[in-house]
Length: 277
View 1 (cartoon, rainbow, N blue to C red):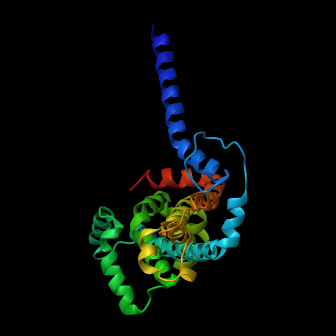
View 2 (view 1 turned 180 degrees about the horizontal axis):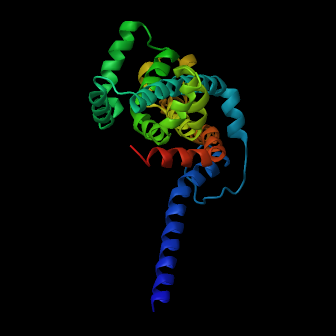
């Protein structure tokens, strides 16, 4: 009886997983199929087009500034990842390893800031960037994304550093290593899983962000992918919805490839950072 009950529960679990997988994959499959069908309407009476075409992908590169938008997005995402990861490393390592006045207050402040959505600060950030003369600039996005990475990932990074034995650092210092040598040659190599997770989260957020990029960027030459594609279909007479679908597919490819290539380190970094706080 117990064996039969266990098989029933297992069967139900698999059935639910299959249903959830189908529900999750259907929108992505619908967008991919829409990007390959003829015409410019997203409506279709069949999921799989009767005829396939890559015309929308070709038009995307020939009739829009998609290549420029892609390079702008890649520039912002890469620089935000580099600066954000470096700032996150310094902040989380200092909080994990050193005891200083205001440490507990800083942790509580970061915890409270995580409870509020980022768009609540957009007006204040907009005024600050306007005062600094950084509106319609990629550096405005890079600075905001890099600093925001600390708030989003500091507890995961701190938790990971807490799992690294301090005896390794003590042994290195006995051998004459300075704080910088310990940090760069011992801590950073051991923190590879956490770095992978944090870098991928920062890159993903910067690459796909629309709300803040739309607030800051004003000219077409400065636009990122999300803003450019939205403006393309939001115009009064625009009907290029299948071209938009093609652009959405191309936007998802870099992120998907990174997640697949870094999947193992991504899982290790997340679970290790959550094992001790």
